[in-house]
Image (tube, rainbow, N blue to C red):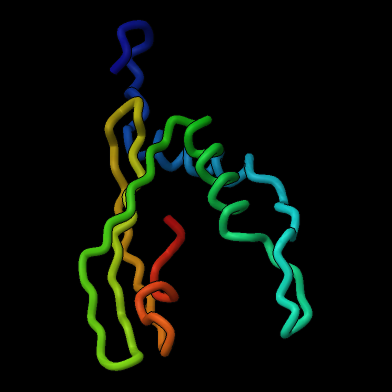
Length: 117
């Protein structure tokens, strides 16, 4: 409750969700500076996506942490499990989601299964 009007304070989880919505709304369409010449298409590079997302998160007071919690490798096949945690720097509220990466790659099986750092 607030002292002035006896209405409940906004819940910390609602503040975090609100900030995440503002982060999403603040990210403009990214230029496609990467080029796949084999399949003939342009794409936004991982570096450009990472820079835009990091800035938007920081601008809205949201921290982001990623950690690999499991790794299974069998021949060319890799399965990795990650936890992604978003935290509201104002309230301390956290939201954690699980993400799986999978790859079959003869040239280094871990990298294609990993998200951007």
